[in-house]
Length: 86
Image (cartoon, rainbow, N blue to C red):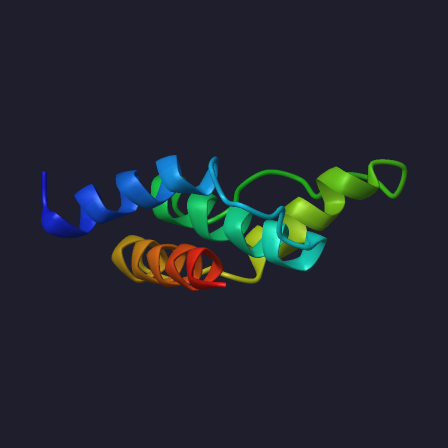
């Protein structure tokens, strides 16, 4: 396992033990970075207007289209480190 992958796995684990729940915008960013890092670009159809949560998640992930997996992992780790420092 690469150092970056190890840091990413540790950040994912520590995201579950944050002292304070992040706001919704930050949660969407974490979700999108995680999905981009682990699955790559978003695929499939955008959820309909009745699925507001699914649509917001899809849009957040789609905004990262083209971002390399390693870059998404680095951004995820940096965001978790920032949240933990607060």
